[in-house]
Amino acid sequence: MTEIIAIANQKGGVGKTTTAVNLAAALAGLGFETLLIDTDPQGNATTGCGFDKAAFSPNLYNVLVELLPLEKTIKASALQKLHVTGANSDLAGAEIQLLSALARERRLKGAIPAIKDKYRFIILDCPPSLGLITLNALNAAESVIVPIQGEYYAMEGLAQFMDAVRRVQVAFNPKLRLEGAVLTMFDSRMILSNQVRDEVKKFFGEKLFNTIIPRSIRLAEAPGFGKDIFQYDSRSKGAEAYMAMAREFLLRRGIVAGETPPPSFAVEEPARPLENIS
Image (cartoon, rainbow, N blue to C red; front, side):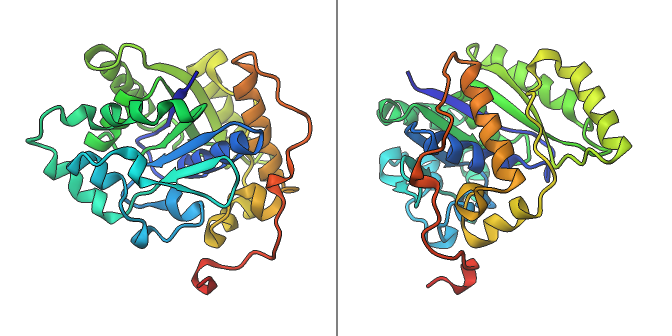
């Protein structure tokens, strides 16, 4: 049974795209057919999976504005079982172009059923806003994961975002539920980070993932090479954390993943920065 999960938070810079890319990669690496849909005009999830976002055509813009079938935008990534629908700056114009469109908030939801049976998980990387694109993603999703940075402004806007999720539930998508929240860019050495963790725990309770994603240079470097953290450095703390999150995610569904990641995570050649890849 296919599940559609939105990775969303109206606040930018909280590890949302990093979580979307690496959770999708972990699930694919564990053997689950996974589709990552980049719904952010910045296209960071697209580049993070090794694609040139400027050349990714057709893309999600064509689906939302021109009603192109979603299957025509899907490309295979370098990681077996992970496919991607990309996005770029073209998508920024979709907000305005959809204002007068029929069923403007249901365009993505209407596009997914045709390809849904091909995947076990569909991950939606949302933009850092509460605009029409995010509304499309939340309307299409069955659950939402909220990445929260382990720093001072972590709780800023969180109540407003959760209120927006509840409004989407009432008005458009009664099946939408909170999957949980995950702490990202966490530095356990800082007293402030631990205080933030306590506050987030109070807010989300059992919905907070036990897995905490640490602040990691390797996680920050990986997108610049067009790689998920497993292909970039499978032995790093960031890779261990996102694999643990994926296993926790699966365990919530009663699925116990194998102990050893399959060989599809192996890096066959040294990583190179994107600008040096022809």
